[in-house]
Image 1 (cartoon, rainbow, N blue to C red):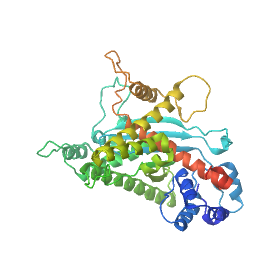
Image 2: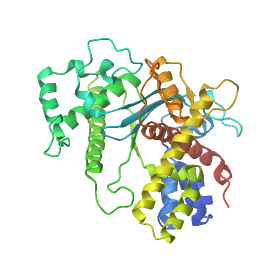
Image 3: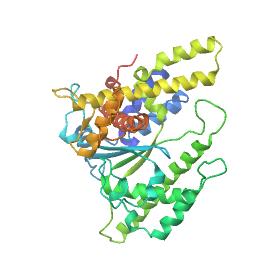
Image 4: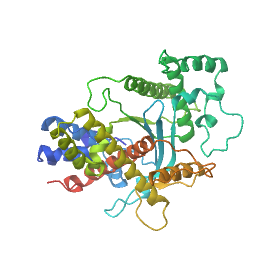
Length: 396
């Protein structure tokens, strides 16, 4: 729920009294860009702190008297997408309304993981298998919209998607990407009815290198297509509502999330200081910087996978404790979580593991879940700062 910055002017009275380093810590704790001079940072904080998507009942009631329209206080349905072409992953989180939780210092808002998948977008143009699958991970499109698509259209797009160049690499064509983007988004919206869709922001360069890799361009194009589909659906449904249509679906809030802000939020838990020390040591030893960057990236991925693995291990363990993430009892989801934990703990798949999901890479699944949980943490902290001021954070 977003409030006008004009309603939150008291925030500016104490923000202006803080040092630039303190303002940067507030920005990092709330998912707000922390770069720039002090005046620009204060202005950005005043504007974006007001854009709290998970306001507590205290903040909502406080602002009822200041607004003509009563702000909603709803459950959140968060769809978090980690971008990729061959390895796109998503996590669906359900979060109870702030009115049903207490926000005391000892209380934690626990989201429930409701779905968790990784897929290759090229598979989105494949028709569903008519034979029932014995795998615990049925095709995403078994409940999707591909069944309403003209088979000739699918065949034509598959022909594009399967073309390869002289080196045997898949050739890029916008037509199948556009269709894949539409099928993916409409399927996920119909299935999970999200209130918020989080899409990982892409960068043009990888590992600090000067070259722009082809795969980054492809993923960037697909990212733009997802945003375009979501925007087109929003405008279409708004027009239907204005025309008195009764079959309009939900219109989620769509937000891009920069991975580096997620990393900064978790700080040393994602290898901040240790990775930096190793990087300096390698440069002093005369090793190439690109090699150091690759090593840092691998270590960062491992720490993120460990962080998520610890959350899921706690969620499946017996005993009463404050959980960072709960896991729903849905059978397919449990299969993915158990397969993740088995690989994370180093247990190799055995021949007798019939029906156990082949989890493949762990980092994409870890990234989409970490992104969703972090975004929720940011907005819980925005709510606390709006209610408590600078006392919500321990800053020097």
